[in-house]
Image 1 (tube, rainbow, N blue to C red):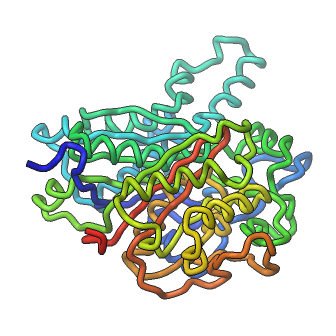
Image 2 (cartoon, one colour):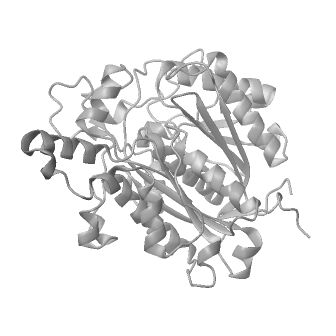
Image 3 (tube, rainbow, N blue to C red):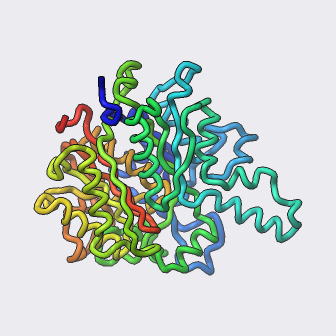
Length: 420
């Protein structure tokens, strides 16, 4: 009998809402072509803000996925969750019935939750008093409502909860869903991350931290991970959802398999509320844990989707962490920073970059790090500069690190993967 903790987990469906497009395939095509989704903010007046750029979702129509009446009762992050989950489930062709509803669950995280809802009803209360607060105010803003609405939409009666670990949220959600399947808690999970925090408070808060790029005259060139002239990250919004299934469960129904999730690591920096631990110590432990969990050697990995935010300390310390974990093999690794095109989707980014990881395996394409003009001498790995590269990809590591010292690493492999 197969060990309770060794059940294999595969990816069978992808769904995405990103600044590069609606849908995983549209986003992936734009990414591989080196397109940027960063533009000047249109959602509100930015005249008093130092940073005026972001990765806004401009072509999303919620009613394409959700009943109009229900849309009005959902914050944008929940709309992104439901839409991305519908796309992922349609892609997987996983049909839910009374026979399997209790063995399929949802774990979707968000770093911030319904910030636009908070701002909207705070203004309403100040103007007209508490009677102006909608009875849907609380259900709209709480972070777990993304998972809740998806669970209700599909009639899923398995686990239904949320995680919040800043920019590591999406990866933590996928990793924890993976472990739930391995433990036989469930046979399939909808998992990933969503975020919708491009609001005056959201942008203003990061501006106050001096964390955002102010390259306002060249939005598409503002996110430049690992590059010498980077000046901060670029906020984005959206959602990235994948369908995870136990291998035999997927095979029994003839599912299409994109790849296999083989490793998950998580660690804490225990150092600072926003800055990463010196020399990437926490990130290195996280990556090493994922490699151990996968039962592979570091040299088996040939591609990393880096956290790569375009901030000075993150880029430097992630580079140092990769060198520490991979040693001489780090010089043979291809390290892509896809935030150069999508911007930083905060709690959603781990879900989005998990999608990029499995599509890199499927298509044998390394997505580029665009805007890489002047190398930073302290960041000296192969960052796949400016143009996508055709190369066979067998095993991919995806890193996500967040405020509060939260680190998460996922490892995906071709199915069946070479280390099996």
